[in-house]
Length: 363
Ligand code: SF4
Image (cartoon, rainbow, N blue to C red):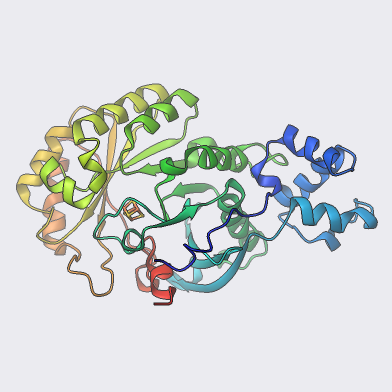
């Protein structure tokens, strides 16, 4: 049983679990004036602080109680690793119940992307993934997801990340967990992340990407939300036989169903779909699979991200040979499919999802 599973408990409620109207109602229920909720929102989402001592516009007598009720500390940084001259920072967080999750900040010229976790662990059991090996501990709350972004925003605002003060411009749900298996909390987190300051963090909705292994009904539900967030589908194989093995949920929803749902999402949102494909040596990187992938995707609104697999210690799965990966790329490009070989930011700090938490998990 993974650490934390026996102890998995709901985290305390936090302001970021609630919409603006619910926050005011909660302040009133706690015996405070409703506008105190707006003051707290400004502190958390605009000033990026949850320190009661900094809230000088709130009467001293009320600060402690309000902060305790609406701004409890949800995540504690357990370890922080950086590389790329400090422009990639990975944080391992311990939640209030002892669960571990991780987030990664990646600074590029002109943008900063936060990769966040949506669950502690993951129940999807992809065999090449460190997180998948340990199973699901629990869903994160909306506020626990938002807290990962706030921490990155805080570090950027404080000038802790080389490149000068900055802000989070993009958020990708590609850390631990399957976001669409934690649907309502992920959607709530997206609203907090994208609501204008000070109700939320003010990140553009178009700059948010939700990644899924292909939970078809949830993709349909997301399409009906009318949010212009980008959908990323972790495909990893063009044929059901191999995908059944690499992404076990494929036994429930086959590739054709997943892609139909993705194209419907693209039509509803007006956004191209990202197809994520981990390049695994001698497993899914053959020329015939590149051609099969091209046939599946040709003439659809899509962008393919090829990701050299970041091998987990002791695993039989490893990254494709660079020459093989380059040929795979060219075959897709020759068929007119836009493709990017994803950079491997964070590789030297266990950058792939789940690897830091896996390495830290006491056995
Ligand atoms: S690859 Fe993603 S969906 Fe699959 S087990 Fe790992 S975290 Fe879960």
